[in-house]
Length: 178
Image (cartoon, rainbow, N blue to C red; front, side, top):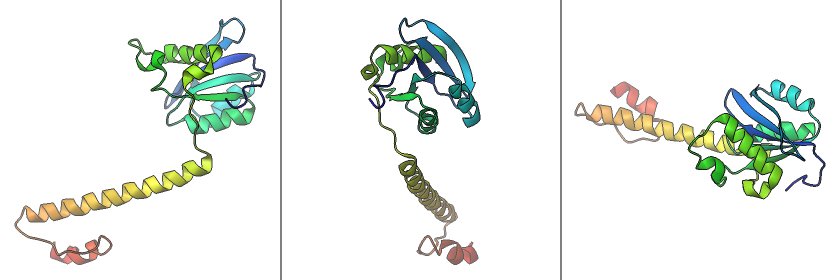
């Protein structure tokens, strides 16, 4: 675990949502609930909240918001562990899932033994950006191919055919034929 030798006063489970996230903060020694609340999922809101806390261990589930939230919370000086949600049976197989229960469960597991969370390593910001460019390009290429195939299929349904050509020259070559 990174930073596991650091002294922390509480452990905070955070069930990440798109617009808001549920948190549950427990006392490190007793496990008593110190706070349960929702936080707005904006950088400024999280910055403000976590800046006011003494050092704590923060447990997040891996997901869309986990990379930027982790970077932000770590930059403030807290220890952050990212849980693998598919390996945390207490959450993944729960029949009574709520944001409150998930945040509490993350905090409890993080307090008792972080290894139970099957922690995952998140990509660096640079790697995440590079992968986003690759994925965006892939999505654009697939969309372009689907659109070209849609036009060709529509034309065929009227008994005609369009000439073969590259995707780059498709619009220029077929527009006069449509």
